[in-house]
Amino acid sequence: MLVTASTVMDSPGNVRFFVEANLASGVDHMLVFLDAPQEPGQQEVAAMLDAERRVTCIRTGRKQWWTDGRPSGLNDRQRMNANWARALLEPFGWAEWLFHIDGDEVARLDRDAIAEVPAEADAIWLPPWEAVSQPDPDTRPTRFKRLLDEDDLTLLHVLEAIREPTNQAYFHGHVMGKSGIRPRSGHALSLHGALTADGDRLERHEDPRLGVLHYDAVSGEEFVRKWQALARAGHARYRKSRQPMARALRTLIAKDLPEEVRARHLRRIYDLTTRDDVDLLGELGLLLELDPLTDPLPARPLADDDARALAARVEELRAVPKHGFHVADKVADKAREAGAGRAARDAGRKLRRLTGRS
Image 1 (cartoon, rainbow, N blue to C red):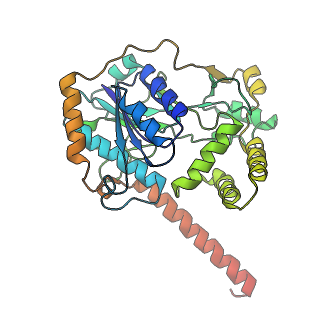
Image 2 (cartoon, rainbow, N blue to C red; image 1 turned 45 degrees about the vertical axis):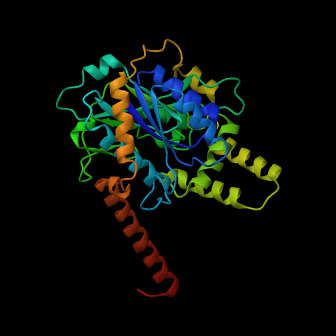
Image 3 (cartoon, helix red, strand yellow; image 1 turned 60 degrees about the vertical axis):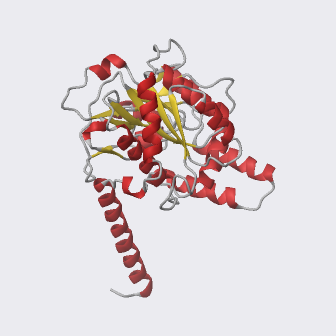
């Protein structure tokens, strides 16, 4: 069976779509960690999740869940929850794969493609397909951007559709995709990658039939809602090109401004940074048409005995300290350290120039 793990705080409507779309797209069972179960609307979300047989809803309260202290960073909480989920599933033979996805993502898991993964492969890559963003769409988008080659990126750059010919400029969200691992392999999950228990990156199996739909900011309204929620969720890491926007949004949200003023400038940031030229992309043949709720795959729910065993193990592991489930990505950490070193050297050189010292 194919299982996902996700740390979520979202509206009941968005969570309902998230669950229905994933279960229609090949996921057999979902482990959903409610990141802020006491926030407004989250009790309704929890009740909805509890009513779905193919979902295990886990409330991550400060005392009952984070017994050794709740991490302030959202990314840290996501990693710990995902690797706790791997430990949860490890004894169960029916748990073939565990994928770490976000609450605005849908794992497109072609079951034939999964069945063809070589036995020696312990990790799978899901490349990102990003939903287009329009200011006021009538419905949830069904057109998606895919990662482009250098020729198409150069074309969009010359047409002034993107600021530079890179997928990082083309996509508003991540370009790293998501990963799945075999729970019994002993390996670990990061936000996007698959790791050994020691933090080394694993080689991942790839198949064009597999991917993850990312509904990063599908409208101006959703862009505003998402970033206001992220501002309350604690520190999160963003790639370098998105850091100025993230900082500007946090600054704007924190200011004591009339609501209509804040909303107007949030919408302006959306128009400048996230709105897609959907007509242009469509004319150039760069968009995929996908609706995860069309032609849903047959449901494969857990057998009653397996469901009871899973619920019992959730209770068994609930109070286990969670910080031990954070597995650091050695490659990413080295890159951050190198970047910090370069920044310190650059600052030192600048200071010496200003003070006239050699």
